[in-house]
Length: 151
Image 1 (tube, helix red, strand yellow):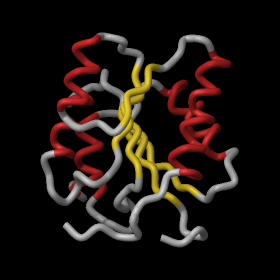
Image 2 (image 1 turned 180 degrees about the horizontal axis):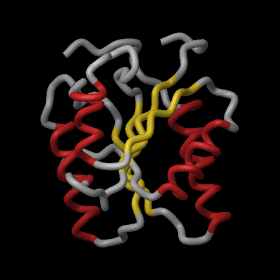
Image 3 (image 1 turned 90 degrees about the vertical axis):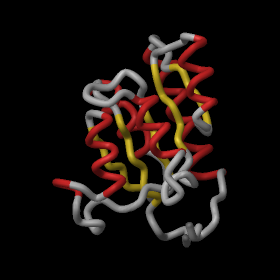
Image 4 (image 1 turned 180 degrees about the vertical axis):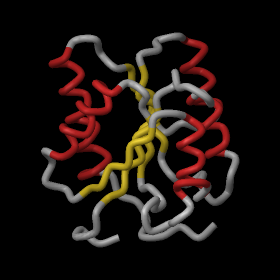
């Protein structure tokens, strides 16, 4: 990937206000990125496997990073994470859990399923904004990934 290529982010978030805050904060970064937002776990898997309305890889490209909420309709985030991390074609994509859940069980299960990071959304707006800014800088500016991983 060159620095001119946009970084593809798949945001899996059913709360419109949280999704809007993430999208706005990422848009403020100088790193080129493209955010694809889906509202539930089923849509996330359809996007990743190019099924249904996401069947065209040109309009549903392979993401460089997945931001995944846990409390999702249809298929929950832990199930989506497990599917991603057991599929050889997807497992190299970093998955960041971005959730309101502070439950130790959720944290433990997420790491058992090989999440790359587990972040709890602060209730305070300013703290949430700071978290998203820091997340954006880390994953979109500082973190390095191989150009291509052959699976």
